[in-house]
Image: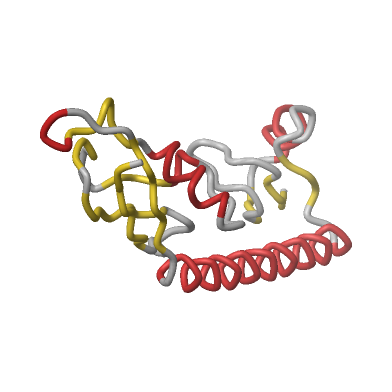
Length: 147
């Protein structure tokens, strides 16, 4: 019996795979559980269309991420902080502060995607890395200055 898997099934295959299984296993377990559907001509055509649409969407997101990376590479942010003795910052600069500074420049990035290379506890120039998609990880300059 030929089936198209709707979700990943351990020791059988991944979602979208066409698999050959025994009739009882397919009819009594996989199909009633919603884990697979019959591999008819119509279902195979539908699967091809879904895969093509997914590939197009993935290409669009990668292109958008590359454009965003180019924009971020040329961006630097300045974060004013209050300082105490010896030019030490009260507290530290976090990825949240960098995200807010980017938002003031009309660039919206989730703070969880921003990683600082080191703890920022003094004034100066630092580098932050933004994890967009896969290997696309632009770096931005972060200037920490006195208020």
